[in-house]
Image 1 (tube, rainbow, N blue to C red):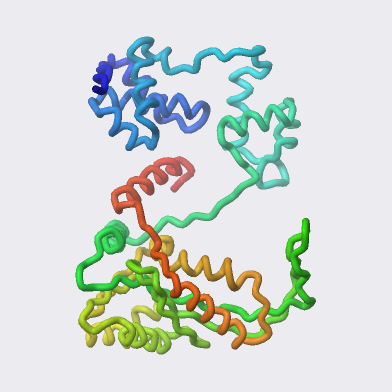
Image 2 (tube, rainbow, N blue to C red):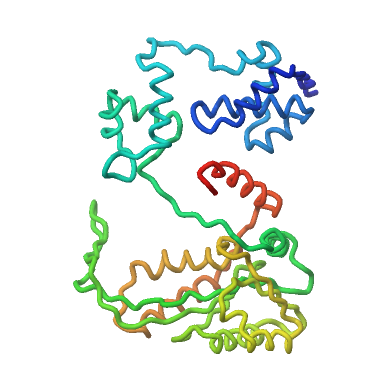
Length: 360
């Protein structure tokens, strides 16, 4: 039988201090995390629920709840560790973190270990240890795009609802086009892989034209309906919709998930959907291609067939694409969607809170 969680009652001063610590954007993030645990515990939230909300384990929540109940605010501090005493004090560590997060070196976009070590009068290894402890990686940069769609929440719930609970007597198809696929030929022959030597290609290439792939991924089975065109206008998209209509049994409804590309919303396409009532159009939010499962399949196509392919004509690259589709359909595997709409929206909300200070 599980033991009852230790009740937490806070004084006004303790609550004020915990709120201050929980909002701390720099310095010891571990302390901010522990403060959030205690605040939720004081509000009567069970350990398991706190663990789910903060994406941690129930044991971790129970540990810091118990430490606070026993030693109050001092219980949230790290215990002394064995070994020789640190030569770099907390003030210097905080300075390293602050300079890394909120400044740039002259003539550069980001700090390196040696640049920051020289600036602060410490060793590069000290900077490296601090960066590792706080998860700082100035050399890395990633891209992101937050949707500005006013119907973002409604569209996420709509699309994810189709993934998690598809309607009966219907198929759910993720539809999109991969345009401008280039037929590339290397300027010199590819050197094959050998023991201890990877395959090698020249960085220079010759272009032999482009083509476009229209694809519809069946969410339930993983099968793909594909069609190749040299152009990717609304005319070609209508042709692909007719292909889908021919390939899906007539007694089934068809739910089509697609992005907000202009060719998907022309008058001709809209009229086609009206004339075919078994087709239901669902649009993903703007800047949210990650929610369309066919994008993952396009990634596999790029990685396994196109990236290292050598093609001397458009027909050659089109043949390679058709072969990839045939191989996938021989043993189709659906993409398993695990996150609910609420979990996705909560994750985005937490991310927006993290980046709220830089002016977003």
